[in-house]
Length: 234
Image (cartoon, rainbow, N blue to C red; front, side, top):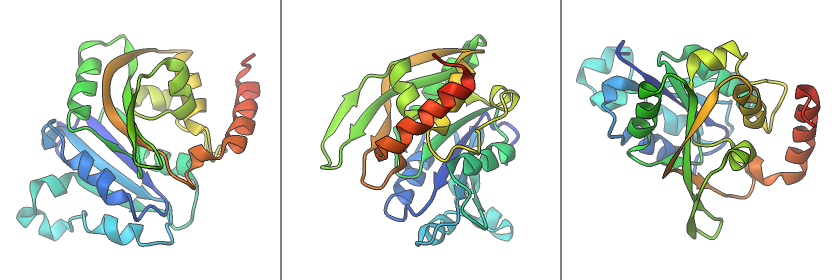
């Protein structure tokens, strides 16, 4: 990987064979030069064809000289057993070479200007700890609408955020005890220590679908209550 890498894109995947290629392609199709970022895909022991699809994007070391340069920025890691999205995210962070990290869920995707614009905010503002953007929400019936973000909304979904890696590591990364609402826990800890910036552009494509972790509202509410108690939130 080029030592100029400034941002590591983390794609987590568990049984997302219908969506994972779109997520990867959106991360490859960026206006930020490919020498400046990497893509780390962590498959959390999927039981469908997700890993086979991911493998099509990986380049064997002996083939690097003859491969598409864009494909050279993709790395894949597969867990031997299912550990949950927090553990998958931490696996990627521990292998990340960029000074910034952003997680793209395997069923979501991003605008081509996402990485360039978001990293520019952090590059030029040392006082900003993380930057988040607005969303285009794709509903289950395929209709789309723009969702303007607020910090409260961000705490509910946690998507489309670029963090400074050194700050995430200082905070202990994602809490692997939480199999849901892990992003809420991380951001709550983060905003106690670092400022954020809202980039008012809809660069993250947020896909609603049956079976996703965010649709389990009862579970999410219970876990949020546990997190709030642990963090001393009233």
